[in-house]
Amino acid sequence: MFIILTGKPRPSWRGGFTLLENNGVDIPEIVKEAEILTVYATDTRYPGDWEPVEEEEYIEALRHAKTVFDWVSEKLKGKIGDAIDPS
Image (cartoon, rainbow, N blue to C red; front, side):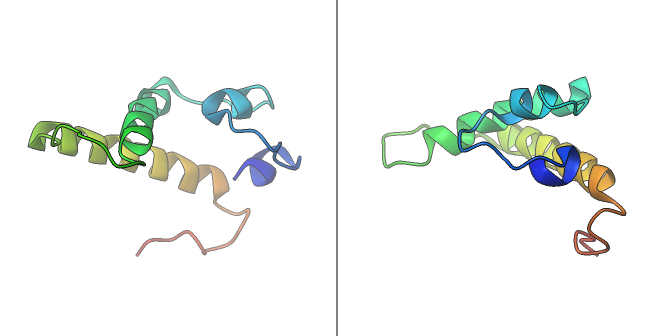
């Protein structure tokens, strides 16, 4: 996504939204709220004694993921054809 939106090769380090914003991509606040998903990705990446995710947290995570997916899909529309159409 980075190279498509900015026209620049992606740096070797990861920076999420900051990386995109520093390269001229405007990110809506509602999309930035999805940064909470990082907790799920990092905390569950390695074995450990993690608390189960409650149904309310699960539903909120799905809502955030859909928001990000929809935003990215819209940003990429016309740039990579219909490859991202989930239907």
